[in-house]
Image (cartoon, rainbow, N blue to C red; front, side):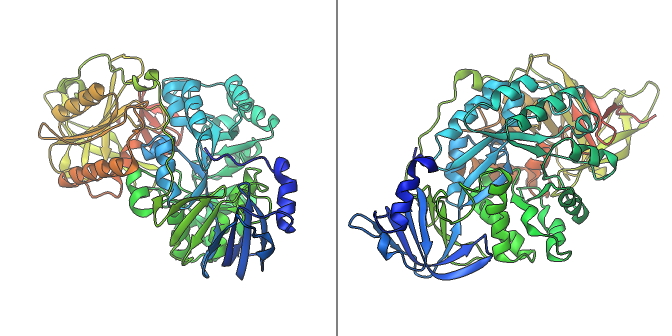
Length: 598
């Protein structure tokens, strides 16, 4: 790993290079400096780098060039700070930290702020430690947040582990922990839940940042109580008024563009039309799967999209660099091209399209032309992290039967409604027939079955319900051990036989995503690490994801990134209706509800 030395240990060397008393390691000449402090594009700029840090940025760095200096003629390209992703979950890429870094570094992402609450819900503190340690060996900056809500909603779900305030206080002492991950239990904060108060207090005492997650669209006194409770950012906004409300209360509004969450366009008007100060807006991805990263990019994709939505290019870059660094207290390290900072630098042909030709991380030439120039060491995940799917029994079609009230031939039921390109769901209702005493799904109404299969404690329990929005018109089923946030197994299908086969298949391979139709497996993504991540290359995982998308489409599903929608159906902290191992959950009221409506 190319570790950059602490600033205080090399400050005299930086001074000597800046003044010409010592030669630089590398000098970039004749570029256009994207200055995120002044908001300027400054032509004919030179940059001198030594010991992995910027030493000089100005008109002429010839005094920094010595016999051993590597001189790079930028030839009028833009000099852009390395991009920062202010909120994301590596596990959502279905990749390990190392494979994720390999995939995103070529797209100019040189700093990641990751919340590993997915693996924490499966493996607890030990899982977080694995990702923390893997992050520390990365050639780019991968900072880790301590997961705040494991489980995300106590009393409404059962995760594979639990974290409490004492765990958070201990993690705050780890060398690579940057703060507290998104505090999803927003009712808990607003009601002074003891666990939430303790975790936030431990983070603040350590002088670190508290991440937010206020998913309710109702900006009432609970919202104000949540802000008063300590979270300092929020990525759950979907409307202009959400972004405005956060920023007015002193929070950073994080605007996300993930694989399936398109929340930038609706909120960026707070800046482009309402004229709010852009310094308190941050761009992020939240969840991006391997296919999106390989084919479309990472933070460069988000910046490009923000520009397409009308944002000034330099302002968009500020939201993906300096604003993020300042938020996490790392302004002296990241987010700008200025003396003393880590030499994370992109050479870009065109700002609106974010056409990156070269990526430098900590002064090292890491990628060029979309290809890595150096190897990145792999990380070995131990056996306990690969044996996490414990179903307790083989499932059969009758495990997915849904009993109807006695003496009925038709019932009204609650249905989870998928909303394309957004994380929230709808709380729908449908009238369904009863056949042989069991409630029957109805493809004509776009209502199919959903089941949550317990997979942490081998109980063999199955919770059944209904979901709408996938558009399936053939007998099929998809099963996944990626089921935010408790990560049991979610199975969605129109055939109980296929549902059982898909679930059992994941038990055989130790986790992943599989799709069955007419009794045959059509696609499989093996995710052996915690049932969440593959240690194969992003390109391989992306190819398997494409096969999954094609299999879903062949059965009628036209949703954009439907796999991501599938993975959130058990996320009981985002309205309106979800499924957990304890039953259906009304997230607006944070309480369990029955499937059949009386």
